[in-house]
Structure formats: structure tokens, C-alpha cells
Image 1: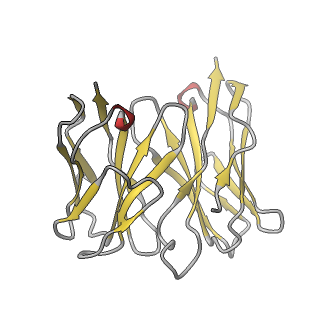
Image 2: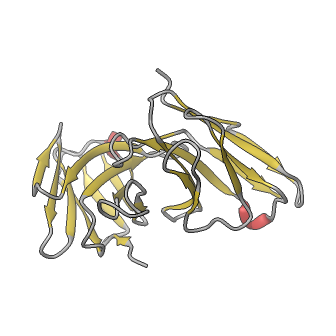
Amino acid sequence: GESVGLHLPTLSVQEGDNSIINCAYSNSASDYFIWYKQESGKGPQFIIDIRSNMDKRQGQRVTVLLNKTVKHLSLQIAATQPGDSAVYFCAENGGAGGTSYGKLTFGQGTILTVHP
Amino acid sequence: NAGVTQTPKFQVLKTGQSMTLQCAQDMNHNSMYWYRQDPGMGLRLIYYSASEGTTDKGEVPNGYNVSRLNKREFSLRLESAAPSQTSVYFCASSFENGRGYTFGSGTRLTVV
């Protein structure tokens, strides 16, 4: 079946640097993508989402970029802080219609470590 | 507004015992989901309910059953627990198109 995957399993950065977490997806029918942050012992928390009719969306200190041509998604975190240390997951919804719509398929996650 | 509430937070079972994990949401979401997360891995879908009255298998349904009791509640049952079911279980809910996807805080289950 189709799946979402991540290029880098771990990422270490210095406090204040910008972080970029990448994700490749293979389901070309997916039209909705989400990034989640998961801290140790907690459930995933929504960070930002993007629909396939957009190629960029910005939030507070975070930006998601979507490149449908190469099926690539990235999460950029500006001025990374120690509190940003967590596992980051991308997820895709499998596209409109059919039984997969609304169900999310998750990547394995990238561990982000921010050093003071 | 509590979001998605899961109970219990922790549970230890002996092999062969049964239990039900409870999940409730107060966001008027139509769709609800059960995932499991194993160490160092992403979330895998066990079962989902697209709307009240319907349930469907996900990626890893074997050994589990679910009940969509009403729009708010979606329970996951282990009839005969096995050590392979040791995991963290997350319930989630969303609108039909996947918007508003929200997770509970998880149930850490150990089967010995």
C-alpha cells in the first residue's frame, strides 16, 4: 500500500537555528497534509496543515511547504527553541472519496533535538 | 471543552485477559479512530469509524474489536490480550474530511 515516509530520522540543531524536517509521500491522490508534534509521554499535537491547492502555509514560527511535483512536504521551524524538541510526524489523508478519505497515514517520525 | 478523553491512562494485563479502552470526544466530530504506537514507530491505524453506526478495519485490526456507541464514544476491546499488544494506544477524532484531527493523551498498555 501507499505510505508516507521521512528522509531523516533524527535532527539536532542549536537553539536559535532554523530547522527543516522533510517528508516524502507516495499517494498522489492525497489532498490534505498535517504536521504533528509529539512530546514524550503525550499524544500528537496538531502544528499546521496544508491542502493540495496550496504550496506554502505559514503559522507562528512554522511554515509548511508542499511540492506536489516531487511529492515532498517540509516543515520549517524558525528560531528553534529547546521546547521544540520532540518527534515530528507528517500525515496525509489519502485523497477525497473512497474509504481512505479522512483516515490519516503517518510517517515514522523525525526526532528533533534542540541544544541550548 | 475537553477534546478527546481516553481512559484508562495506564493498564497492565495478564496474557489472555480482556479489557476495553474508552474514548470520548466533545467536538461534534463524525469520525473517530484508534491507533497504536510502538517504540520508535509511527502510528498505525487499528480501526476507524467514519460516522456513527459504521466501523471499518485499519492497518492492524487483528486481536481487536470496536464499538461506536454513539457519536461521542468509540471503544476498543481486546478479547484475549497478548504480549504483542503491548503498546501505547491513541484515540483520535475528526470531521469527515480529516479536518480538526485531534488525539487523546493515550493509554499505555502492558501485557505480561
